[in-house]
Image 1 (cartoon, rainbow, N blue to C red):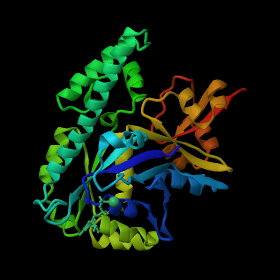
Image 2 (image 1 turned 90 degrees about the vertical axis):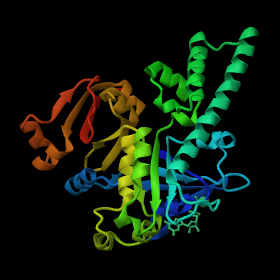
Image 3 (image 1 turned 30 degrees about the vertical axis):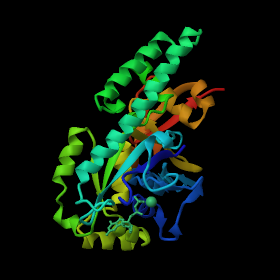
Length: 354
Ligand SMILES: Nc1nc2c(ncn2[C@@H]2O[C@H](COP(=O)(O)OP(=O)(O)O)[C@@H](O)[C@H]2O)c(=O)[nH]1
Ligand SMILES: [Mg+2]
């Protein structure tokens, strides 16, 4: 399943411009429309995976995928988070686009990127608070009539309400794994990771000037990525070789699109493992700390159920040795059990019986 990132922000901050830049390809725009919302799926570039492809020359090459969504708020430009919870609840994380180009915002007020972040974060928090209040009220009424919400769940919701009442998003709340699991079923928007993307004008690429935004975001535990939508949209239509030249002129090492994808993985605490062979070289996305048996379940539930052992080697080592057999000879291809914690960039092969 592709990771789902939803673009949010104040009206005319450049969400659609960022979406276009992210989903454009040399062959043209690449998205589909459903319910008025635009969905664009992009492949996650990974130099390790590409090197493995060049080594194995497989029939099929399958990088990880991310789907970006540019939502169409009903009846206007402003996203009302309360009304849009059913749509936004499907996001794995949000990309909060901040207008950092031009001098004035959509209301004609002097541009204030920090205020934009504060207002969106607050709107999300308030919408969760209102939902949770209603939920608690209903749970209490139901309970009087024999409803079945557990005492634990009710206590948890009350703790969440108090946290939100202090204007703090749920993602900053300390939760045990079981609590986190319960909460996730509610799809509260403030529990989702948030990545701030400052949509800057081309002159800002060199001049900077977003220190206040960086500081304000850091205070909230958020990361800011600078992204020039107009420039990135242009870059995206070039073939890879021309992209490198173009970026060099601007003193940039890689398209911001790639940095954004990597920052999203980091914010979501996701890592990749790879499967290799003549048939397919493929990336799989898992959470940090996932055990080998659960990682196997990403590929197929049968492999998870019949898990025996995982053979594993770091992709760097495999690339250095040039073949799995060489890694085996050197003892760097190891056998691990089901509780082995998979590390980023490992090549895995599962032994299982069904
Ligand atoms: N100068 C400049 N204009 C931009 C930039 N990004 C977006 N815009 C313009 O700002 C307006 C609103 O952008 P849009 O992407 O539609 O915002 P949305 O409402 O958040 O989807 C449009 O007229 C865009 O052309 C940018 O980086 N620089
Ligand atoms: Mg738009």
